[in-house]
Length: 127
Image 1 (spheres, helix red, strand yellow):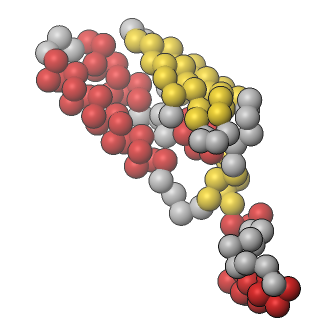
Image 2 (cartoon, rainbow, N blue to C red; image 1 turned 90 degrees about the vertical axis):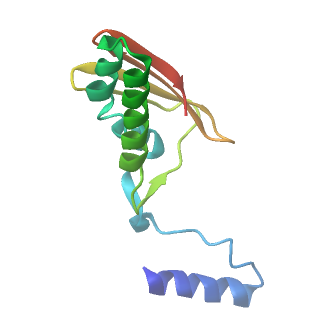
């Protein structure tokens, strides 16, 4: 991979192009698109959000929401680069028996809308 990138940089320099205009090989990308990665990061949401739906104390609700957000952001981070999303791309999945739907609604900046229907709660928004 490194030799490929070095060769591309050298080829671009000798042809008068910039070094930032390098097309990357497909091998460095992960097999999932960005929208799939976002959906997979919702994996622990039912575990935490069901506690929010059941809790009466606002402090307990806040703790569960923050735990869910932190867990989702940590799961999202990996070393591989995801494929860029395509405008209008959709992804549907079942997470712990709860349906979740995603759609890419903007390309620049990349924004994905989501909807999750769980046991005693509904989550919707955009990332």
